[in-house]
Image (tube, rainbow, N blue to C red):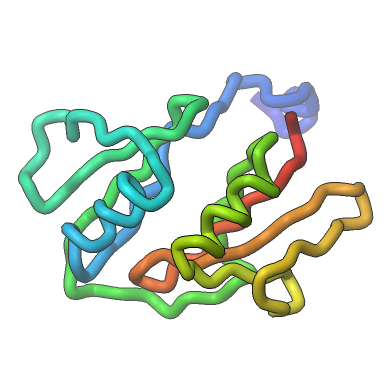
Length: 137
């Protein structure tokens, strides 16, 4: 198959399955994703207890893997979720004293991308950046 024959949009029907994150404290990270952000914990496919799985509303999963091996975190490397409830989420985060900021780094507020999408950024207990926006809905 030549590259020119792959010009069709997503010819292999690729969809996101999961993101895997190395975390220092599995219990703390699981609390953040499950109890703070409200993601549903699901069975981990029979893997060992140092791995826990959580699921977003679109069935995409976050796999938390306890490890001493950590990587440097950069806001430009993040995963992004969307919600129709961004103002409600922002009020909730403020009520829980959970820091969030816009892309330039201003605390407690959004910024608007050139395409009109509002977005915020927050970090999980291990410093991974999460963008939450009101686009693609």
